[in-house]
Length: 284
Image: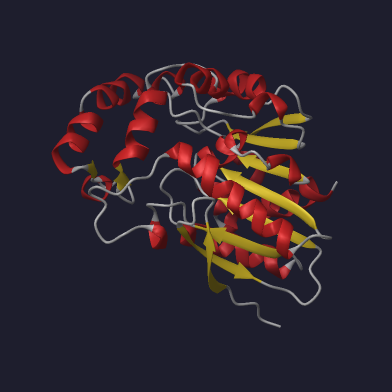
């Protein structure tokens, strides 16, 4: 039977609408929610979500506030931050999973920042397991040596100036994906200029977090050819999630018959072997 994703709307902790898509089975083995990377539209994950649903799991994709279908027509003046995603949006997704799937296994797959900011969610320990793909820190010094200083220069100039001029970050006009709300940009910018674990950044800002209390087992994948979430991120990730069972694996494209995986390629059907491994990771 063909499984078609159905659009639904969730309510964030502050009642903000969160656009989501749900793939349902008659008797699912569990529920998997996919946390997107920074400002990545949920549609990017649809092929992966559909495949997971075909393996008899219910799957939820969603757009953080200010992104995709959860964004207003005009982002100028729209209030949203990455902290909001971690404290209000992700916890609401977990609340929904707890209510709708009280007896099922509950899993998360986090891409990039979506595998990192779960430490801001007060109910993350209600998840049974998470697989994190290329969890990044946004810090330019963690980028690959090639282009690192060019990225740092952008952090110092292009990002703040563009936001001051438009009231949001016009990423689409720079061929950088979806536009970003002002608050998201300031979070990303302020984290990007400090090479620190997230728990320390949150402590410095007085933001409530739960990084040191996470007990959810996590398997984190990094790729040897990723220019963003490089191996320089791994020590920080281990520090942030020091209280849980954390396994870190570094992928090589050639091991999967590929020329490139990088920061986004694991969601291509070319990575079917990795998709199959993900199911094993979550359920073992």
